[in-house]
Structure formats: C-alpha cells, structure tokens
Image (cartoon, rainbow, N blue to C red; front, top):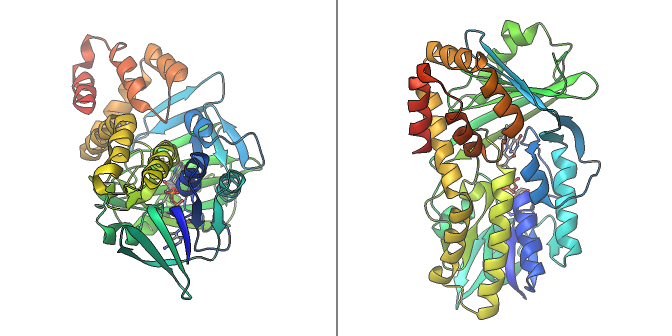
Length: 390
Ligand SMILES: Cc1cc2nc3c(=O)[nH]c(=O)nc-3n(C[C@H](O)[C@H](O)[C@H](O)COP(=O)(O)OP(=O)(O)OC[C@H]3O[C@@H](n4cnc5c(N)ncnc54)[C@H](O)[C@@H]3O)c2cc1C
C-alpha cells in the first residue's frame, strides 16, 4: 500500500490548493478525485472578486469569461441601488476550466493526482489513515485533508462538525437581454436565506439563479416567471446547476489525523454565497499545517488544531459579520428591504464609497466605510450596521 504524508480528498478549488501547498512544503501528497477530471458537475455561478482571483494564483487564461464592474441591487418593491466602478471588480469564470487549471497547478507542484478515486471510508490505525476506495484499492497517509465539498460525509464521520445551515441553490444559463452586461443583478426578497442573481455573460445570455433556505428549484422557477426576469428572457434554459451551499463555518475543523477545508468546513461568505475565496485562503493554511504535522510525525488533534486557529484568525471575523448581515437581511420584511435599498440609493456619497471600495471578498471593510457616510437621519441603518459589525 502506498504511504503519503498527506492525502487530500476532492479536487475542487480548495482540495487542489491544499494539495499544492502541502506538496510545496515538501510533503508527499496524494489528491483523490472521484470523477474522471476536475470541475464537474458545476454547482456555481462562477463570480469571483479580485482577492479570490489573486488567491487562485492562476494567470489570465480561458477560464476567465467576462469582467464585471458593478451591480444593481433590487428590493422586492422595485427600489434600485445602482453602482459601477471605473475598473473591473469581479470576473465571471468557467468553473470547469477554473477547477482544471487549479488541479494542473497542484500536479505541477508535485501532488500525485488520482482520478476516478472515490474514497468510501477512512480507517485510523496506529497513527495512520487508511483510505478505502471504491473498487478495493487502499491508500495510506499520515494526515487527511477533507475537501469533499458540501456533503462532506467522511469529514462528518471523522468528527468535523456540520455548518450552521445548508442552503438550496439552483441556477440556469439562458438566452437573456441584460440591461448592462457589466453589472450583476442582486434580487432581494426572492429567496429567504440569501438572494436571487442575474450574471450576464458575453453573447446575450446570463446565469440566473438563487440560493434559499429550501426549495431552490421551485423558487427559481417562480423567479424566472417574475415580470422583471420574464420580459428579458430570449429562449429556454440551456444548462441547469443545482447544489447545496453551506453557511456558518463548522465549529471544529480539525480532529486527529484529519482537517476539513472549503465547503466541507462551511467556509463560505454568508453575504454573497461565495465559497472560493475563503476556501482558497483556508486551503493554503491547511496544506502547510498538514505537511508540517506529517513531517513531525505528530498528527494529533492538538497539533492539527493549529490550522483551526490560523484560518479562524484570517477569516473568522469576516464570516461572523457575514452571518450577522445574512440574519439581519433575513429578518427584514419586504417593506423594510424597500426602505433600506431606497435609502442607500438616495446617498450619492455612499454610492461613491461602494464604487471605490466595494469588495465582495471582504464586505466588512466597506461596511466600516459606510458608517462614515451616514447622516443624522440614518439612525436605523447605523443600528443595523452596528449590529452586523458586532
Ligand atoms: C448555486 C451556487 C452558486 C454558487 N456561486 C458561487 C460564486 O459565484 N462564487 C463563489 O465563490 N462560490 C459560489 N458558490 C460556492 C462554490 O461553488 C463552493 O463554495 C466551492 O465550489 C467549494 O469548493 P470546494 O473545493 O470546497 O468543494 P467542491 O468544489 O464541491 O469540490 C469537492 C470535490 O470533492 C470531490 N469529492 C467529494 N467526495 C469525494 C470522495 N468521497 N472521494 C473523492 N472525491 C470526492 C467532488 O467530486 C468534488 O470534485 C456557489 C454555490 C452554489 C450551490
């Protein structure tokens, strides 16, 4: 049986990055993916902010489809907040090509890639993990990094706690006449738990989707029938993506012999549903800690908790603030959402601040700036922001 220092389960963005960093730190690393390649099935809108793009360490390539400069936030009653920055702030990517490029990076760093390798069980024996694959093969490693995605069956069995909630996501790609191809639309009130979105693509189509506490597909069907969407549809959907989105990170992300990263650890921004940026940040830390622990031959829970501490120091507060914003928006009535969006739309200085400092990867930075742009009649908004920022 082959013995590796580190075995990573799952070749999504978090798994490929963790494998790359473990290999880079000198650990013999196996990356196991159940499919015949990375990036399938797609369960993502593919919108990445500038920090996520930088964290991916990928150069410009065919995975980048389109640059975005702004957004329109729409309230249930039709209030609109529009902003558009001078430069690109986010990019729409082809997730299949993105994941393949991430996997190629891990391979180039020396990770041993095992495709069609479905890990069914993990047995911990004499300070080693035995990974049992479908088909009967076994692989042995000192540490396992679970980057299995939202289902994370093996991580849960090993004692990694679940996320606070799992939203139901659904999205179609459809011919569509977008108002502005450089602006994302955010539709509040159509999906309790998060929001609905329209992400224009080049060539007259768009990704239209939502994540909600339940019934993602049913709610998407209703969303597509709303006047504001229906009148701009130019044909039938050509692709459907469905998937779960974890919100609220796992309380414990390291146990003896195993770490969890990405969706498996609930590392998703609760304000936007973006999981790639936090997953990549945490994966780099996981790869480094796993490699060091394996080389020291100490893969105890106590040793691996260094990862839990480090990623929480890097992202914990941002995700905590995000959960507060998510809960705050979730508790607001349609009328309150109308009031909030209408209020923000009437504040040109605030819109300028969003255009200059808007950051989908670290929204709390913008929220702090927003506090400085409020006037005396904004007491309620200030209270809301104060609650969100703790
Ligand atoms: C509808 C929707 C829209 C989204 N839009 C965005 C967006 O625009 N921007 C953004 O940043 N995030 C978005 N997300 C979230 C994003 O898709 C995830 O956070 C991200 O894919 C998580 O990456 P990961 O590497 O942790 O897991 P995944 O990408 O899910 O990868 C997990 C991998 O593990 C493999 N695997 C699982 N179990 C096993 C096993 N037992 N053995 C071997 N292999 C296994 C799977 O095949 C898969 O390849 C969206 C999510 C949804 C549902």
